[in-house]
Amino acid sequence: MSAVTIEKPTLREGAFGHATGLVCRECGHRVELGPHYACIECFGPLEVAYDFPAVTRAQIEAGPSNIWRYKALLPVPSDIESSPNMEPGFTRLLEARNLAAELGLDKLWVKDDSTNPTNSFKDRVVACALSAAVELKAKVFACPSTGNLANAVAAAGARAGLKTVVFIPSNLETPKQVNSAVFTDSLVAVEGNYDDVNKLASEIAGEEEGWAFVNVNVRPFYAEGSKTLGYEIAEQLGWRLPDQVVIPVASGSQLTKVHKAFRELVDLGLVEDKPVKIYGAQAAGCSPVSTAYKGGVDAIRPVKPDTIAKSLAIGNPADGIYVLDICRETGGAVEDVTDAEVRAGIVSLARTEGIFTETAGGTTVAVLRKLVETGQLDTSLETVVINTGHGLKTLDAVAGSVRPAATIAPSYAAFAATGIA
Ligand SMILES: *Cc1c(COP(=O)(O)O)cnc(C)c1O
Ligand SMILES: [Zn+2]
Image (cartoon, rainbow, N blue to C red; front, side, top):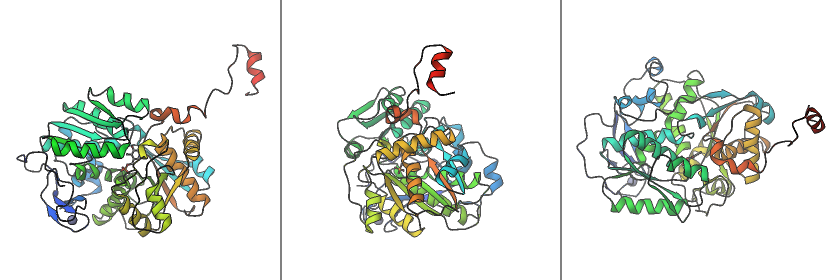
């Protein structure tokens, strides 16, 4: 299981920064830093462990306007800025007064990750995976993807001068296919859903030497990149934590890492401790975590996805059980919405805040609305909703619901007849 597919390279000093090893989330078994992702004792997921140095707000603020301002808290070398990468992160945290008013919330912010280099939050995780792949001297940079990850891997690999091979379900939206194919000549469309593509990737990782699959054999390093979303939210709020955050759930990795980031900031003395409710958002057509949450059970039953929110369409989410734990422990919830609600969520964010989100963001905004309407979310508390991707990648989702209000002859009389003025 712990496929060591990359031949043990000689690691340079500080290759993974202040990381000290990989520790099993389930049983605590510890292994050395390398291309390992599953515990040899219990098959549990491995996570990066650190011995953090003392870090101050001033040191972070003096860093670059991208995720490397937090490099001391990531498994990357101290000279990370000098190797070619996409420099993602430090995206806008916008106060959303109009959307707040529409939903009946007192204070709301949108963390807008659609402005990352390849227009989704995946640039963050891929930047950390790329660093690991480079330090491990991988020959090929690869991933199975629901779309955005393929875009981010293909672009980052091109910039780093690495061979990239990316695998996607063949029914993926055309814009997401083009957004990968433009960066790599090795986009592979697989006849199957994401879970089939993922299984194939694990098989290839076991057969081929020297491949770094960002979300398979270097997943522990990859996943740490999502922590930067949590760090940024706290820093941009003026070094304090919000009361509640709504986060989309595919594999569940992002949600668990935003939660971890908040805890780390408290432990490092960078923000004051306070309770933060964490909410997970899924589409009804792929809602294994929400279903388990509502059923009051601990086990996730895998599903066959059928939703327009393709970037969230993981039927067997690796971190689903940890999402359940976190949402329950913090007093949050996991909720799901229909495809019609997803479309309405996209239009609602666009019309209130001028932000064009993809189906994942439509899901998250629609879930926020549903949480308010069902009384599961306290409207008097400060809320952050995460927009993880750009609407131009899923144009088809709303192309049928938004269109010109009128098509007219170029005359004032024709315009006046429309009643728009
Ligand atoms: C991948 C992805 C997510 C969720 O990621 P997980 O960490 O797997 O839960 C959310 N939104 C978008 C747009 C994504 O591409
Ligand atoms: Zn274990």
